[in-house]
Amino acid sequence: MATTQFDNVYHGNGKALGMIRFSQAGLGWKPLDEGSTVTIPADQMTAFAWLRVARNFQLKIKMKGDGEGEHVATFENFQREDHARLELSLIHISEPTRRRGI
Image (cartoon, rainbow, N blue to C red; front, top):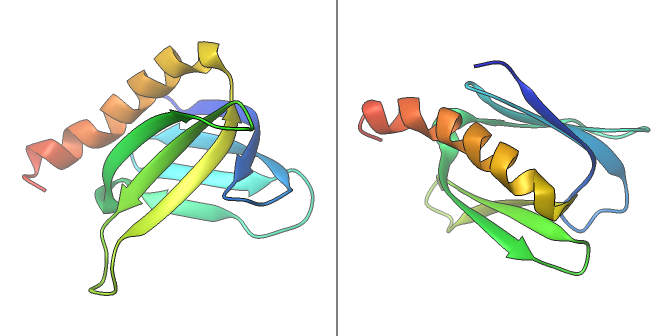
């Protein structure tokens, strides 16, 4: 699978726009200006949700916890027409995880 990229996406409730890139290994979000890069390995992702929010649409990712409760990452400002490409990217990310029995 090649990488799939979306521009002008917010991470969490932050005010910084960035780009998010998906590959079979997971995802990476990088702010357009200064700030920290966020990476989430594919084997840490357990569930995905697509929600309508104030800033267009949100991708909510549930991740494996370390005993301290549920970990969630959110990315906002997706457009309605991004859904099909995003869904295909997430299928490619989660498929190897399902084959490993995780």
